[in-house]
Length: 129
View 1 (spheres, helix red, strand yellow):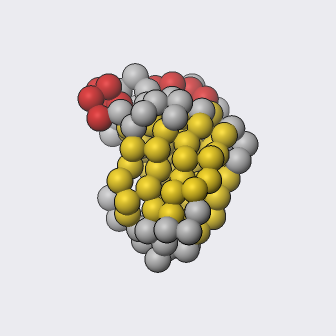
View 2 (cartoon, rainbow, N blue to C red; view 1 turned 60 degrees about the horizontal axis):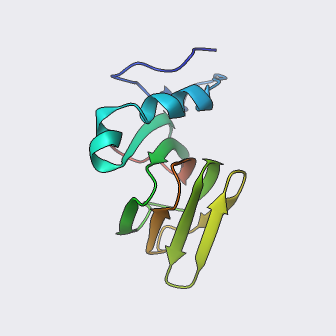
C-alpha cells in the first residue's frame, strides 16, 4: 500500500471492478501538513467516487467549524481521530474515534472540531467537486 498520496490526486473510480486500500493514518498526517489546513483549519481529499457512492477523507483543526449545510444525499460520517460535534436541527452528537453518525441529504447540519480530527464521509450517489 502507498505511504500516502500526491497532489493532484485522482479519486478511485468505483464504476470499475477493483479493490483499493488506503493508508488513512499517513493520508491524514499529510492533509494536516497542507497549506489549506494551516490557513482554513480544514482540508479534504476525495478518495473514491462512483455512481453509487463517494468517499471523502476530511481533517479539521481544533476549534474549526463547518457551517450549516446539506449533503447531496444520504451520508455517514466515521471518526478516525479526534473529536467533533455534529449538530442538526434535532440532535447534537459528540463523535470520537470509532464513532459514526448517519443522516439523510435533507438534514441541515454543522460540524465543530473540539480537537484536531480526521473522519471519513461516505455519501450515497455521485458528488461533483
